[in-house]
Length: 79
Image (cartoon, rainbow, N blue to C red; front, top):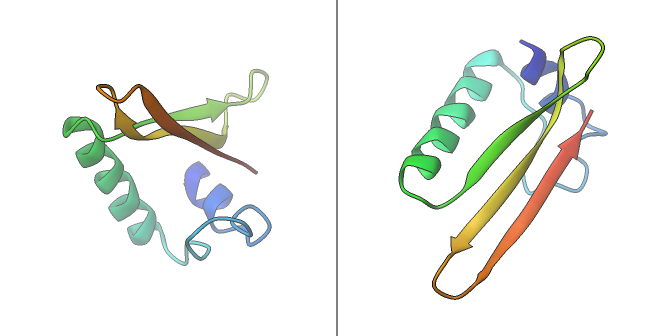
């Protein structure tokens, strides 16, 4: 639910290639997709957690992992 609060905010997703989440089911599907990418070695996503509240406030993602070519893309979002 915390992640839904973050990714359903239009201000958070303004510069992202996807629209704000409209349901918790959509967020669950996204998280499942992220786990699949991690298992395939395509990306590594991490939650950003507020130290005081211990609530999820964003994420960072190492995408397009190309170990042999020596580069990756870094993305983040904060709510």
